[in-house]
Length: 321
Ligand SMILES: NC(=O)c1ccc[n+]([C@@H]2O[C@H](COP(=O)([O-])OP(=O)(O)OC[C@H]3O[C@@H](n4cnc5c(N)ncnc54)[C@H](OP(=O)(O)O)[C@@H]3O)[C@@H](O)[C@H]2O)c1
Image (cartoon, rainbow, N blue to C red; front, side, top):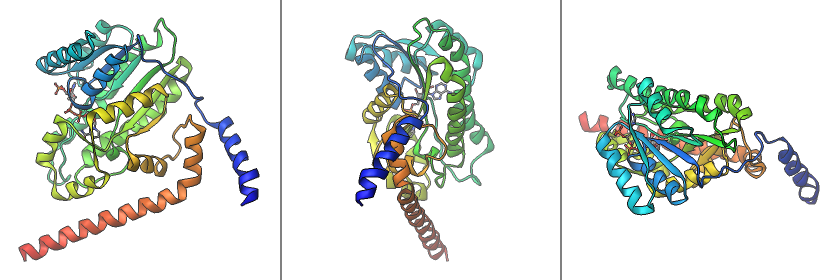
């Protein structure tokens, strides 16, 4: 114990301090241009309010102009900031590019748009699966590709950020989310590779992994959620959009690659850290020390989930027997 505390622990902390990459960074928000896709509702709108109240210039992109106008008005009322709004569908690259060129160089790009239509793969139409992938994954490629040239050439060469809104369903596959989980897992590959490509331009990538969050999107989703999905997704609790927005903004400002939003999210992030980048030597320390225990907890979750699925099937069989 004495050897561990006096020798091993300081050595491990020192080693991690020197090897974590990319190096720690602070990303200022005040007086900078924050561009949020899906900024007219839910988490995106809550984030727009918080960024505006911290003195950022805010731009929002979504499809419905009416919802955008409402969002603009509510931001003006709460913070006095006059947000710019752009109506475009992220599936349309040219429209996204026009909006981003009109908005001007971006310092903090939050790729937040997303839809979630849960259903078992066998029952879900291929069109709906494609719709989910096109908006959540291809739409994110469109937004980033349109924004990158201007972000790289920004006059203020201060640290910039590209933050991608994933989900806890982007860290672990959940019953009823084959299309959604696939779209969100895809974002992780995009983010990990992109971080290596843009690090030389002082651009820092973040991924946010919220649990169920009270938003208009979740309200719609709940109407279609398969029964088992409700049981399994409920195990991580739910948050308010404002709380997720605060975690998101704090995570972006500290340049975190992975931004968990609640306690279960922190455990999930440790269990799924894999080869992802880590800037904080303290978080790296937790990952190294708790990797085994996090795996054990993850196996307990799987045990519980498969138990619920088995029970549900058994109940259905006896009901229809
Ligand atoms: N709420 C949750 O429980 C939860 C949990 C984990 C992760 N997330 C993720 O968080 C993000 C925001 O979710 P939310 O719950 O805040 O959803 P929301 O309230 O439904 O808001 C979605 C936003 O995305 C926009 N959008 C949708 N499709 C678009 C498209 N094709 N092109 C441009 N904009 C589009 C919507 O505006 P228009 O419809 O007008 O285009 C709206 O502004 C999503 O990526 C979601 O996957 C949510």
